[in-house]
Image: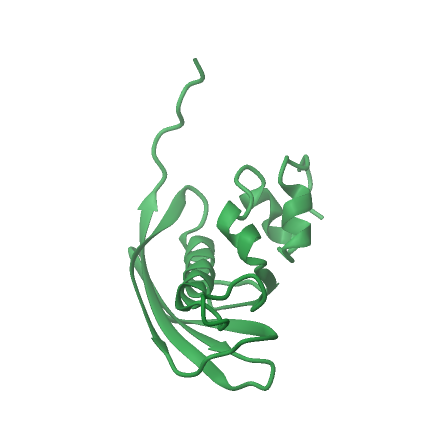
Length: 159
């Protein structure tokens, strides 16, 4: 448990999404984002080098009843952006500048697992590969995301 940490308005959201307690202070003022909540993404591992999460197929399908291709990309960008943000560290943040995906296989039920592995962790750019698999370990899609790391701006004064 972190010393001198007061739970913020997003603490319950962070716990529900599987965010490790060591990252609660970092995300306490922002949460994990409305889209991540809507997609049902649940984190299993989180580090700049490797971030893993699951997402249900149900509720994320397109008209043909299979997982929407955009849902694959949302999972990939979520994982890559969180990993890049952790690498950026205090006083900095990650901004996605490129994402691409190749879809290999469709899925119409079950859970998708995204595994994000760092390809490059630099001072100004990070690149991660994200592989989405089904419950049997079959590759569904492969994505790559590049994030630019930027310094946070000056704090804004309240009016």
